[in-house]
Image 1: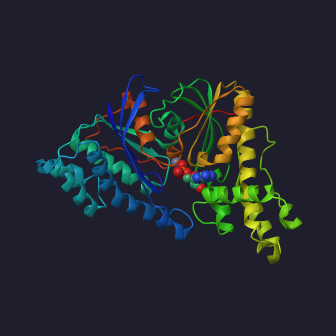
Image 2 (image 1 turned 30 degrees about the vertical axis):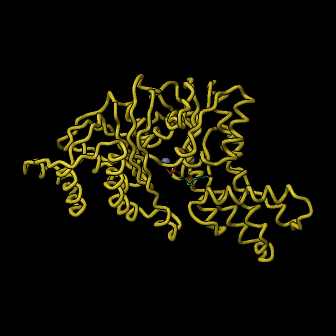
Image 3 (image 1 turned 60 degrees about the horizontal axis):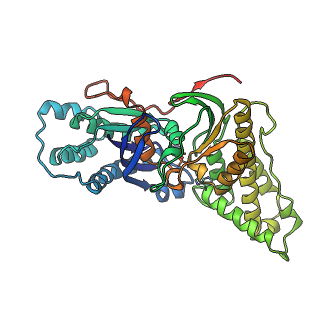
Length: 405
Ligand code: KG4
Ligand code: ZN
């Protein structure tokens, strides 16, 4: 089965075509095309994602990416397709406020043969509403005019499943259940218990900022750029190199920098990262300029931020796995690109005899391959949504059952 995946939940536009066969989870997977257009440069000056700019960029990128993916898979064939006026009118209803974009899409649909795609999977939520709507409307238009079934996908479930996307020829290991999943991204930090595929319980989540958001906000305070995870990780690595070499003249004020590990001792599985950001901000204001002007200062701060975030994530994840008698742990979401987190969690899993599943690095960030996979796994729920009411984006969409612990 060929599945087209579409991802626009935040600031990455993703289009992927996967060929999958076999059991609903995990199937055998061949990635035929996987394209991502990052908007980092657009949002960088604002220090965070601006929803209206994200929407504009998704509108600009979706069709060129789709054409490229179809061309890569040998499916882009120019051919006149005649649409009766009623069909044009029903398609126009999908784009009430985007006439210009609709005319571009309509022109594509009328000039290219419908491709050999069996299912369209699109991120329905959670995410930024204007960004989500762009992908949902685009998917709806393709589904309606090609007559291809459409399946809405939860972005966080897709992150969870991304550990089973193949890295080159290497097949991913078979999942074991129960699994504890740590989903850490710019917008979410969740601990989820999966008793089997499609049976998820939310056992803990952040009460304020997400882990990725904490990396982003503290990096901004330190002037390290956006998104903050990668520069914090790089600066932390430099600090480790500095302290491994003797004879460096580092002031005690820098060596003594230490940050709290919020909620690390709390008996529940919730997180709180806003306090950590406040602690960084407070320390930053309090320290004398002479300390802050040292080139070692941002390195030590970055190292301490990364250690503090990872300490809390690790401790709670391992305790959740133990308490729920999990057989394995899944790490996913943008923050799962963090090498220290990957390494430390792998060690902890070995010590605790837990299997460890994590996505190949290229699938840690937002991508449409994971959306196509999640769509395939839920294919039995797909519908030919060719008439009103059309699919709705849902910014606060959840995929778990919430249970009190
Ligand atoms: O999943 P994702 O691509 O988008 C959302 O759904 O939010 O995650 C983006 C987040 C950003 O906050 C970014 O700073 C963080 O992932 N991130 C990292 C690293 N690479 C990306 N955080 C820590 N270390 C990294 N290497
Ligand atoms: Zn994400």
